[in-house]
Structures are given as C-alpha cells and as structure tokens.
Amino acid sequence: MPSTSAESVPAPVHRLVPSPAGRSHVVEQGEGPLVLLLHGFPESWYSWRRQLPALAAAGYRAVALDVRGYGRSSRPAAVDAYRMEELVEDNVAVVHALGEDGAVVVGHDWGANIAAGSALLRPDVFSAVGLLSVPYAPPGGPRPSEVFAGMAAGPEEFYVSYFQEPGRAEAEIEPDVRGWLAGFYAALSADTMPGPDAPDPHFVARGGRLRDRFPAGTLPAWLDEAELDVYAGEFERTGLSGALARYRNMDRDWADLRAYHGAAIAQPSLFVGGSRDASTTWLAEAIEAYPKTLPGLVGSHVLDGAGHWIQQERADDVNRLLVEWLAVVAP
Image 1 (cartoon, rainbow, N blue to C red):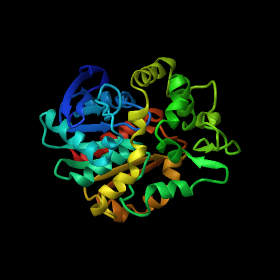
Image 2: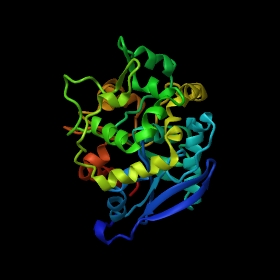
Image 3: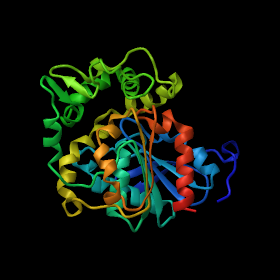
C-alpha cells in the first residue's frame, strides 16, 4: 500500500458516534482500511497519539476509541454495563457508524483483552487482531476472582483484587489524580520502575495503598508534563469508576463467555510485549501456547528492555511492527 510522511497526513478528527453505551468518542486520521485502536487502564484514545499519524501515513484509516467509561464516551452507572459482551458491541457499532463492514482491531493492556474478545465473538466484523502487552489466553479455567485472591502473598494483596472492590481504589486515586497517574505510569515503565529489591508495585500491603510503592518525582521518558496533564484532566473530569469497572466484571465475563472457554482465535494476529513488563512475563505460558490459541499468528515480538506502556515507550518499534503486519493482513 502506498505511504506518505506522517507530517503530510491530515490532522486527526474527533467524532462522537452512536453506540450501545450511548455514544463513543473516536479520533480518526487517514484513509484506507479501517484499524480500530483500543486503549487500556488508565489511559484513553490519547495513548495512540503516536500511532495515528504513522498508520495514516502508511495508508490506513486509524481510529482510536475512548472505551466505554473513559473520556468523552458514555459512562453507564451500572457496574455490569462494562462486561466484555457490551464492550464488543460498542466496537461493532463504531465500525458500522464509520460506514464500514469490518476492521482490524488492535488493543493494549485491557484493550488487548477487548480486542481479543471482539475477534472471538465477532469474527464477521474483525478480520485480524493485534495484541500489545497482554497475551491472549482463551476464556475459561478457574474463576478469575479466585485466581487473583490466590495470588496474595502473606500480608500483601494483588492489585486486581484491590481494584475489584467498588469505591476502594477511587478513594485512593481521586483526591490526587495527577500524582497517582504519574506514579502508576512510572511504576510500570522500563526506565523508572522500581528495582528488583524494591517492593513490587503490583501488590498492596494490607491496610496500605497501591501508590505507597510507586516511584516518586520522576516521569518516564515517554511522558512529559503536558501529556500527563491530558490524562489527568480526563480522569479529574470523569472519575475512575467507569475505568475500574472492567476489573469488576471479570467473573461476569467468565460466566458470559462459557461457550468460548478454551477457544482459539483463528484470524491473523500479532503480539508485541516488553521484556520488562509483568503482563508479558507472568503470562509466558500463554505466549508459548500461541500455536494452539492463535493459529493465525503472523508475528510475536518481545521487545528487549521495554516496559508496559509499549506503544508510547517504544513508538517507533511498535509503529514499524504494526505497519509490517497490516501490510500482510489488510493490504
């Protein structure tokens, strides 16, 4: 597909489109085959700011979505409105609202899970799936809440269990959204994450706060003060409950997707993770299982020295890998 320089493509356009959530906010750049980009926690469409122009320049219609509960997209009040099946239908509605029948879907962090769910539940709409940082593991196995409760280590609680209790994480985060986000981003970035001898920031001491283990005072290299302001401004306006609701639906998803337990994703796929990202290293067995679980896998890459926020930390590498993959799956 012919490409142009990122500087020469038209500026991104913000749109509100109807979806089962009410409305979905999307940011669109470029023309060509549709590529839907799904962010993770705690981010927004803005986490794809370095991919939108690169994909547009490569000849694609790149569309970054504010997932339900984030940014300018609708935020239903009910916790169970954030189950996987609902999020997949939002994505389908966005594709159709943009005048398309199908799309390639790419996600990071929770967005990777939502992208995988979209490909699994709606293969008629999503022709290929790209996963960043979080590997695909088929639905099924033990109930998620039991798994994460079992990860508690003595006096420590795993962060997912901490996030699952309504109101608990909000009470920690919302009095100082900007400071909390800065610490959380730094804790999972390769250049600022705590050393191997420091307490693990994925765990919370009983009676403590997650932020007690965040590094203080230094932003990761991929994030400047103005960019942090964008993220903080969104969550200061919306609060965190919509974003955290994804964690609070894992058991519902486990039940809802019972028919898909153990299911492979057949469409062409891509995985990109970071060697210093716990999401990648803890799920190494899921990556090893890709010949069975992702039989259409085109490429699997673990970037040496990269942390969790991979499309922001290593934008040039991720852009190259995405464009090379898209040239195969969406020429």
